[in-house]
Length: 211
Ligand SMILES: [Zn+2]
Image (cartoon, rainbow, N blue to C red):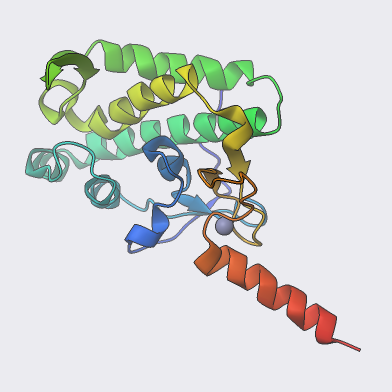
């Protein structure tokens, strides 16, 4: 069983669109921890921050005042829901990094995702999306577990059709983000050229300049 790692530093963060570069909402959720390659920093410092991330990541419905009000009324339950979401997140990190390396998915991570997925399945409603029925969860059916449930359903869907060769871990220092390489050539090494790619180039230039 994967426990939420206690050693990880939690730091408040203002989420921006640049934090969603993975090419899939599930991987973007895993990337709410940065610097996994060195000293990981967890950006989800509260349930309210999780909701901010969810809004930015466009989890339907875009805004969820229902959950904000519920979290406000039940802070301990909200803290529990946040902790559960993080346990899923760490399991997904273990799962997808293993798959990116061509390794077998760790059984404990699969077991954890199965738990979240079962819990999500109990809250599922079939929604008509332009004539196509799709299993979805809603804040009304999932309650405070909505973000966890949503990610669990999407994770299973992603795993069913995972483009494994395109799944990468960013090579940037203090990053460690997961992403799907959607470039034509399929040789993307960085989560984002504008941040990690340039930082890496600058670093290389600097070390090359040194006598
Ligand atoms: Zn990166």
